[in-house]
Length: 104
Image 1 (cartoon, rainbow, N blue to C red):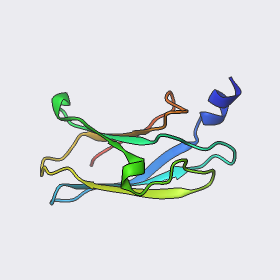
Image 2: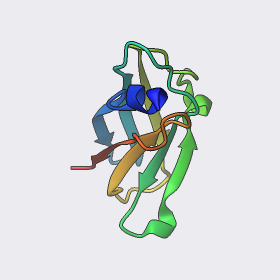
Image 3: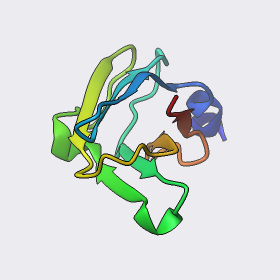
Image 4: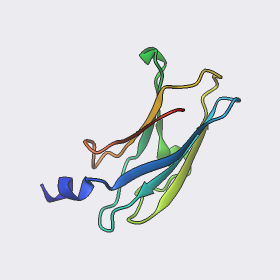
């Protein structure tokens, strides 16, 4: 569909950080010039998948929708000093076009 085509490459994440106090932070960008990204959520993923946790970004001062050409920052304390494996961000209107980064 046209919407799926507009979703391709719209969501971008960068500047992923895990601090020693257990805080995860990431920059989230809507690099599209057309589509609003709605219902954004971040999933902090661990090697032990039972520890994975999902965060609705609207609860963390991220605009919903994230409008075209806009940027947001997400930060959360995981309450664990164990470094996660990766972070995935996805939107409800572009579920097949998630963005993922691994923690270094």
